[in-house]
Image (cartoon, rainbow, N blue to C red):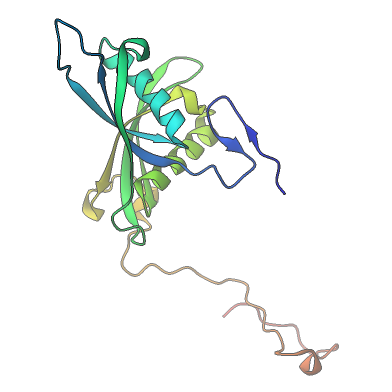
Length: 192
């Protein structure tokens, strides 16, 4: 059985639990005499579980509005599922991340089957290219992009209608061991 180590950012390392989920979190400030019905704040949060989703919700809400966990409450948490999970779509992700030198805004594109998978690919890509940790990346917006509006060339090359992948090294193998010959007069042709 695989050993699972849960790190400080909420991910379970070394297991199949590393998938991100998309949650809709709705919260508000606690009712007071001055404000008996406080305004509701809704966010779509990408997190590995509900606990991390709630934590990220309060993190973003404290930056956007004068509200914090001690003087607020979460009204509901719902997981959002992809409507067409078997269809490949183009996703544009607007994000902000903290590097060693400063804070940067960025737009990236991915081809995935769901929004959560696109964001997970974004986190992996940012970790690989920019050494950005989960805690230093803030997803601002995730949107589906039409094929005609795709900007990045590494995604544009994948949406061509007659896309073909070459098979450069094909080796003909015998169907069973009895048909195999140990000595052959000519070298095999592996390209066609």
